[in-house]
Length: 413
Image (cartoon, rainbow, N blue to C red):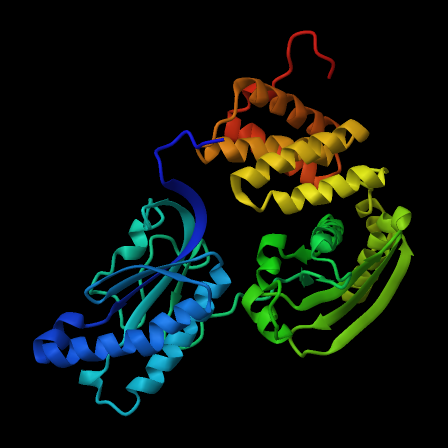
């Protein structure tokens, strides 16, 4: 189905890296030809290869300014830190008046892509570079820590560790030998993340942040520094026939020490029990004071039907693939609801997918929106202790203005 907006226009969330040269006018006045030559060489040897190496795209270069787009904030920050490190080495033998020093800023926000260029309120602040800011720093619209970061010659500052126990659950490796089973491994981790998230004194990093490292060779200490967590959980999932094996290991990200490792075997019919076992063991190692009863409450099953759950995991994987994937995800979620009409999380995610499509300019009929309002209300009513169902239902209500979730006259509470 075609977008309701103009042709060749796309909206997406992106990390924007903006860079300029501190004191560029002074350098040009002193040696125009030499400055332009050195800047061209630095871009060829330093900035451009590192942007490409971190899966970035150069949007435009104008004079001393450069604008690049990344799918991941982590990739953008790593790229910026490497560029500044390389620039420090390049400038070391030069007198201060001849040094080319970049100011780099990274900002995350919603952008509009048209004919290869990017636009939007979250792009404009990044492209402004007043001469009043110090070398190697880029002033951004929002304070650092609220979607923006300033990157100087040193590595970007690490987020402080929270006062309470904190953990990042990384993507589990799919050991099944079948790429089609990737959704199952990701879905297992989604559930493992959700259970500890319900424990009020445990700080759990969101899936979107921890999955940034998927498919990469990682340094656990670096992950801990970049995400601001004390513990990292990693592992693998192997699915063979009706059997599944989960291996997991918990690592102290501050020291790299292995605190706990275990293996969990069972049948697919026991998959929720396996997830609970992993969650309980992890929580027990992180904070002995966590009460077992709290873990049990956190282990509420989203559905008792394995077929419905499998469809839900497939929908999660499809929802990452743009408009076509979101529409396929809705079809899969409807199939899951047909099997288990009380599956609150599946109902809420249908509403969430549709409001996402509409807010990004894709066509969603009024009948579909009305149905989504009923599903969101149903999810909120049934999922009273399911944070996923409640958050997605609330997101639909807020984005839609709340009208469709208001009880109709004569409706049952």
